[in-house]
Length: 298
Image (cartoon, rainbow, N blue to C red; front, side):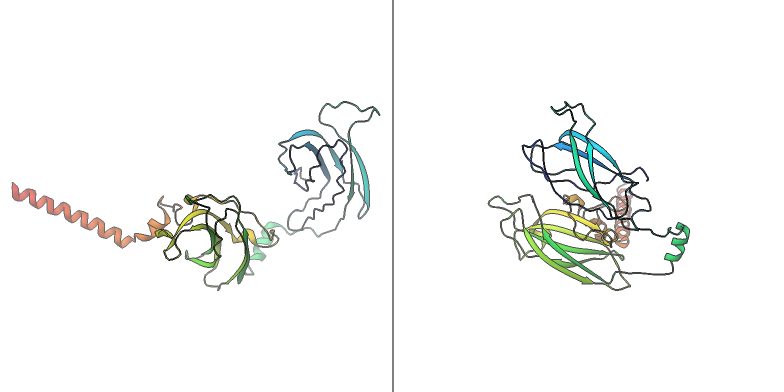
């Protein structure tokens, strides 16, 4: 009803066929929190793919499409629709019929109360405070990691950390090292508990290639493979329980990202205001000493 479109389902690719039969089921539940609008129709598009991959991008050859109006369909009644494909110039078959798509749709409707006005929701939300008590997660796997080794492949492991409200960074899990692999599979679970006084804001995932287990990371113990961050607010239900994250380079690590003054966080943390002030005083003292020497020479 709001003229917005959302991707619902992509079928598998059937190779070398002009009369494909998919027989695939899909569902698309709409939660009360997600929208107050009603789905009024479906748009179906067909593509000719060069491989078995599925995509919503429409990068393959377009074969046709059709729109299906769902506004008048009854609740919990399955209806078989035969849609005539359009959108491109097609040659008619010997039967005189244009290409068609057969799809069975069942719509389940629910009457929900009208949501409260936003000012009222804001006022009532201030009456209740919630905080993060525990975090549960699983580091499943990684794929297509860069190779940092001259001989063989990388030995990756993952460090999971939490960035707290106070600015503190707390390590909560470190996976095992997978030897000689760019496609590691861990499937390791982790959990962490937190207090009301200091709450987590971000989860950081840093992947490293182990070189020397006896050395710290920054002193040659490992080489950086990639990092990513997940805001905890985006992980609260009804967010999906599984998520695929894209790894970023070393410049996007939490320690190397720039602060509000344009200085890397690690460099900014090493220099306190007192240390900066003492450097200014020492420089001023050198200038005073140089002036005294010039006066004595004259």
